[in-house]
Image (cartoon, rainbow, N blue to C red):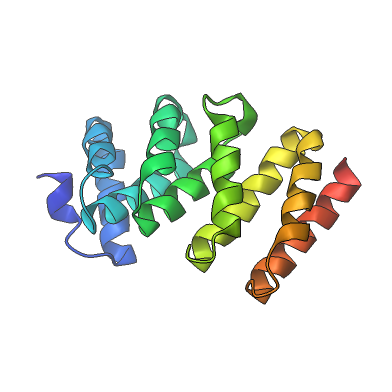
Length: 172
């Protein structure tokens, strides 16, 4: 049975069945990860499987983190962005990853870009806050981003960013 055949739809049930199949057959993890590079909707579904798998088995994906960052920096598939951002939000020592500065810049870009989805922008905020927790000097850049955000920005995003900044104020 192939992983792609299990990803027949985007339902949580299909994603969980696929994840459980990989848990029983860890050699299928590589196949699932390769599907993240395919076209939508398979890439989005596979990325969601990777996200769920990482939440339970983070140690299994450590070697995939550089590839996750690379794909996140270039993909246009919203679902892949969301899932890979969630993986990276859960990743310890995010600042030590290769291309972490490019990832930080990409999150700032997504936050400022009104055409990006609310979910990607919200997860970008979460990842920016993670960066600032690990590297407190980045708090200043995040504050500058907040100050330069257009007034038309979604109110929920603005509140999320303000809450994140205030949390950092106590940690920096």
